[in-house]
Image (cartoon, rainbow, N blue to C red):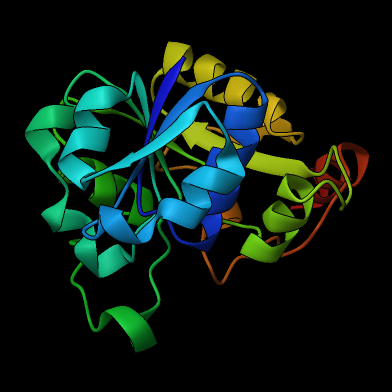
Length: 204
């Protein structure tokens, strides 16, 4: 599968390396693709670099891993109809005050990407955990929560989560998952086995 990554920093870089190792073809997108030579070298023959627009065109699936305030700058017209995995989190101290208009963070992202098949994923784990796996260390099988309103898109996301050595657990729609996936939620930045995750979800 062709995967375009918009935001090739710690999270995007680590996941891109893992997907390339798993046999997918990755285009790392950046405003400065010329600075990604080392990342592409680490990812191997299945990876290349390009602009964010080129990554958006290239990917059958897109990973968005950019600061929350930059979401309106995404090339929305190139993402329409595509599965978009959104790892963005809203941090007011970094992103400034943003009026979400009564929406959850995920719904707000979706409102800026009309026609995209948005799945929230990879937003609740520190990049260092993903980087350890990309470096051949770490603990495989930890939980990644996913949410979305398109069942087929979520199924594709689940497969891609498994391809990078995590275990996907579906926590519902973009609206209902806020209690689990927000940065102030009790499960944020907690490393859980699938069994532990299901127990915690049941308690919540």
